[in-house]
Image (cartoon, rainbow, N blue to C red):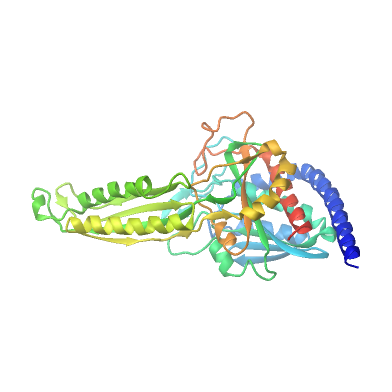
Length: 434
């Protein structure tokens, strides 16, 4: 009886595998046919970008389209987020797929007919708005995935949850948003998500290629504020002061020893950067205090803890040694955990990416000291976040305009691979969730 049960299980597995092969051929055909429409969606989003927590037009377009596909759509999550739920006709796991929606306060300088001319107010300043990190393409790709998978509803072994997330790039001071708020508002529940996949297009990776990394792939980020308090004096009589500017200079120099002398950089990189220093308003007045703002980046939770402890110790003790005080706040306004690709899941799904793009086009990449709030989803369930090539073939990665700049540019021919990859990851995981 036991042998018979095993035999039946094997037959069922072979049947599912054969069925999945047929579905993936259908995915490829449908994705190729959808290429022009995905580009149209992307160009529309690009021409009409919206900042974090203000993606009202964007969210409306997405929700309406999901509903037209027969997908259950929920709106207003974490302000402007949209979640689509596609319930397959067969039992199985819940697979979440995520795309971010927000643009950046950047004035576009590219010479394309659909360039953004949008302006708005951000942090009390008049700014341009641009999809300078290609969230426009992420949304368009996921809409293509939704169309294809919804057409296969009768064959799906499980449920797909399409997460269109606002404010990945952050929000104005005093606001809340992004993946952390989506999680708090229950996006990973009802139905409970088992696994999540996401991608990010990259302007310095050639079209047709996918890059990935198991474990820590993007850094944890903490911003910080250091306020150094001394004693004010006339600039002509510095001996009457406890000069917070000089103390701050010593703190900045001493902070550089954290990475060079405390972090094992053979395992993971780390970053300690002071990006702003403000104090005083005249050349002949030593001020009473100085404010410094900076960022910390780490690829493991242990290194993240180390950086925070060392910054606090160095800043306070350096100030104390010179008769001043230092108040350190970490995080100051934002914190993202490490974007951590579950190693077991990554190894399991790597063949899917290789079969989709070609094994030679799926490349292991070094860790990135940039950060992504996709990490908040990965704190709840295993997930994979990978990178999709967007640089024209034969391009120079060092010359390609980088993300978050006015000249940022993406080759649209890479979108179809993104559609196929997310569809195939979903189908293969549903076929073998354990």
